[in-house]
Image (cartoon, rainbow, N blue to C red; front, side, top):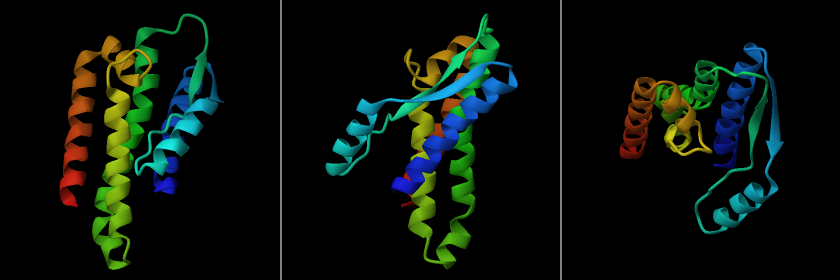
Length: 153
C-alpha cells in the first residue's frame, strides 16, 4: 500500500512541477514534516491520511489559465494512473496481483477526488477558479473511477 500511495503521490507532485517548468516557472517540492507524522499516526489506525508536502510554484504574473493547468496536472496524473491500473486487472489477476491493481486504481482515483475538492489549499479551488466546466468534468471522471474501483472489490 505504501508503494502504491507513494507512487501516486510522487507522480502527482512531479506533474505539477514539470507543468510549471514548461510554463517557465520555478517549481520545487517542500516537505511538510507534520504531514509525514500525520501519515504515520493515521496508518497505525488502519488508514492513511498523507500530506507529506507539496510543489511550490514561483514566478511573476502567473495567469489564471496557467495556474489552472498546473493544478490540473496532478489530479489528471492520478486519473491516468487509475485507468492504467484498471486496464491492468486482467493481466494482474493472472499473476496473483489483482488486489494490487484494484488498490492502485482505488488509491489513485481517491487522490484525484480528494485533490479536486475546491478548498483553497487543494488543486480543485484553482481549477474551479480557472474553468468550472473542466473542474466538473474532471471531478465526475475521478468519482466514476473511484466508485468503479471500490465496487470492483
